[in-house]
Every structure is written in C-alpha cells, then in structure tokens.
Image 1 (cartoon, rainbow, N blue to C red):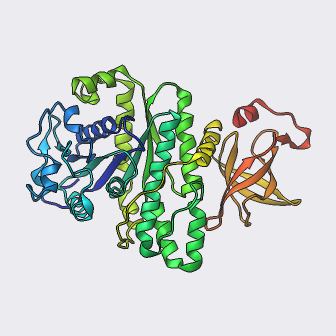
Image 2: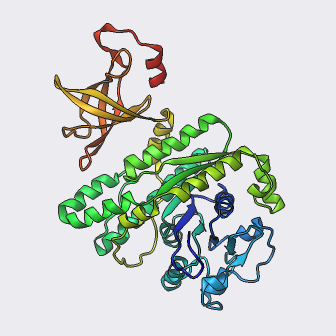
Image 3: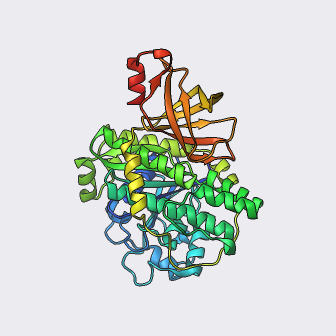
Length: 430
C-alpha cells in the first residue's frame, strides 16, 4: 500500500460501456467504495465529460470544485479538485457538468488531464468514463490498467458493448502503429488477420501490438440481470471479443436487477452503504477484491511499448448488420466451460493428439501441435468423455502464433465403437 506523497497510482480502473443507462456510474461508485472499505486510498474521478453525475450519487448537490475548473486552469492540479466523501479513504473528483466545450476538450487539454490522472496521490484511481466511442472517451478509458465494460443482457446493450471494446482495441493498435495505422475495414474483420499482415511488414511492431493486447486488461461486468440464463449473454460476448479482437475479456460477474439499487440512486446514497447482505453487495465486493488482486505490474510491462500518434477525427464505426448477426449466433450458443482434456484430432485418417481448453454445445478451443487453416474440416474424438464422442468440426479461428484454434461443431456427435450416449455426455454438450 502507498503512503501519501508517493506518485503514480498503484492501479487505474476505468469503467465504460457502449451506451448510457447501463449503470456505469453505479458500478464505478460502488466498486470505489468497496476498495476504500478494503483499506485502499481511492480517488473516484467522474470522467464523463458531457453528463457528469457521480456527485449526485453521493448526495452532493453542487460541488465547490469540479473538473471544469481544472480544464479551464482555474485549478492547476487535479489534487486541488478532489473532495472528501462520507466514506473514509474515498475522495471524489466531480465531473464538469453541462459546461460548454468541456465535452470536447481538445488534444492539449486531454493530454494534460491524462498526465495529472497518472500523478494522483492514491492507491487506486477509478475513472467513470462517458458513453460512446469518440477518441476523447476511448483515450480516457485506455489510460487504465483494468478496463471494465458494463452492459445489460439486452441485445442493443451487448451490441454497443462490443462496438465500444472494438473502438478501444483499434485505438490502442492505432496509437502503436502511428502513421502506419490502417485499421479500418469491415466490422467483422478479425484483428488476428491484421496482426499477421503487420508481421509481414514489420515484425517488431506486430510483437509490440500482441504484447499490448495481452496486457489490455479488459473485463466484463453485467448489470440489470433478470435471470441466471442472462449470464450466457455476457459469456457469449466474451467469446466474440476473443475471437474477433484477439483480447481476453473475462466476465467478472453480474448484478441483478434490483429495486434496492434503484432506490439508492433516487435516495442519493450508494448501494453498498444502505444494503448490507444484499446479493449485489456480495458481487460488488467480490469484483472489487478481484481488481485489487490483479497483477497490474505484468499488465503495465506488456503495454510498455508506446509510440505517439497523430490526432485524427472520428472513431471506430458502430457495429454493423453483419456483426450483429454474428453476435446473435454467439448468444445462441451455451456458455463455454473451461476444461483441460486431451483429445484425438483425425486429419485425413491421421490421428493427432490435441489439448482442449474450453468447450460448449457450439464448439471448442483447442491447441494443436500441427498447423490448421480456417475452414478446414476434421473429426474430433473426445477421449476423456464417456463414450468417446466423435464430432465433425470446422476451424473458424486460427491463431498460428500460439497454435490456438477455435472450432465449431457442424454435426451431432457420433460415438465411436457404437457406444451409446451417456447422461454425462448429454449434459456436457447441452
């Protein structure tokens, strides 16, 4: 833990999402409270430059100082803007509210803000960023070590969460590549293909890109969840992000739709302060604890290589129709289950032993000692499953650098040696 006077926060956590109304501020404020109550010195910064409201959630009607003063240089340091809250160990930097021009601060003011965020005297800084995919929003979000994407199980929210994550990934790669960045194209283009193209032209740059992606620190948090099966939606998005954007975005947990949370917002008292023992309190504290245990040093080391990039207008486009159909297909699959199996891959009657890393009713992720190509068909025998089911598969995603492959099941499993399907096998695949 840090002592006052030390610089650079131990960790920066950003809370974002593709659209407003999904509960980013509720998640950010309560996670900040949980980390402060765990003994950390926390600064919660309202980085929603166009619609700040965190101060309202803490019962503060009109803060004496806010981010607008810093951006206009009325205050020279963010330290001058932070105010104490009723929670010991938690300070708040209120947002700018409806101040003309603040929502678009410009390159210079944005860089000054980012520098001061990095020098805040705190153990943890939590950034509540705005909605949308503008560069101002995404650059604030990408400043963090751990990047939470908040969404609800509604299709429109999941769609926008994917678009937001894609914008953050592409902006990250764009800034590494600088003038060489060419990251436009179809919504369903895979980042892996672009990395391979970069490797052919500049292997060192491609290596830095892969390292940056490995340390990106994306995490998913569900909100306003009504049924247990809604969790499959969050896991479906996690799989799609991995397959198309080449980054891990595990699901940290989800909050249930709750009258208590609704009333806490209306009453201007954060949920954790009024609902002890509530299931959502348990989830929020679990997520906060996981964030505090993350190996941030490793993430920072992976992202260490940075190159300046010119500022450009616009941002990644919203998810198009084709990507939306793919997302629906992912959501139709059951949740993947992590496994550690060996299996037999039959390639033109030549058996090869492979490792199965996870599996669902729709497909699996395998590690193969021999190269496979996208679109290649084969048979996969699950030797460790009762009945040793034999499944026809097609390779959908190939990551040659790590020998990882995503495969889709294209027919019902046919047990080898005329074995009947067991209850365990049925449960596994359905």
